[in-house]
Length: 316
Image 1: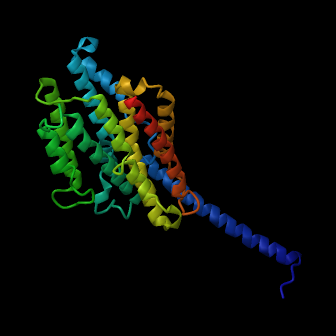
Image 2: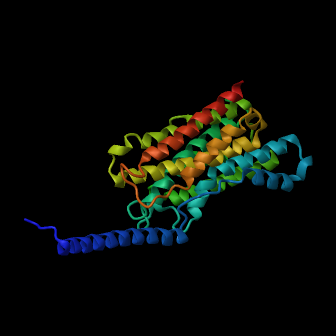
Image 3: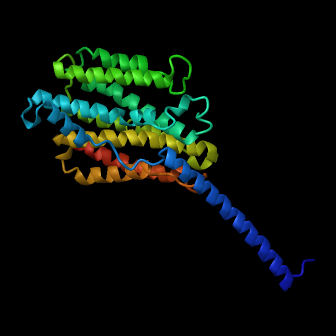
């Protein structure tokens, strides 16, 4: 029988103190390693694509405010396409490049960034398809831009984990070059950009649909039943989707008065606020009960509800 005298209490106190010091030390090592890694490779992304600056720079290049209406629309088309591909370019140009298919920095070693890249790919591919097949055409029967078609079908359709030839990284870089070719052809009239109100409406429908926000929310279903090593991957994949969504909807709101002129300022502020929270989400650790996917789900639901209001207002 253990007698709790003063000496035993001292021993117990020492044991508990040592355990507490070890636990705090482990947390400090984990925190320190994360901060050290963040100095080399970004883990949070507070800044979204500057659509207004991109549009302004393109207008200046074309001749300022005196440019023709069709040139103004083409400048918007370039800015919107850059918003779609901004996160893809950033991932390809990042310290470790496209990690999802690396031998060393792969989805098992740097899993958070690799799964974030999966999410970036999912959203980028969906929005590029819509841009090419809907926005960059004069009508449903008009021919799709050859450069955009080749980019989305031959290069951005490659599995993001593919390492062997053609590699995902090389394919995406080649696809981005084709997008630049399309943008140059807009200046000469060889390419088409024709974004109408119904196209903007369908663009918001795409974001709200199963292939973008629906996909992100689906990844986090029953998050509290998932093991932590699966849950954190899905959270960062949802983050990747949200990063592209933030750039895209902000660009649509910035470039088109029919979106921002429908008393949608408050709605868009809320949307961007919660997307910013997702973009800066990087907890010390994730479990099914603490820092679980429930928080990200709530952020995504706030975004989804406000985007539905914005979409519906365009039809009024």
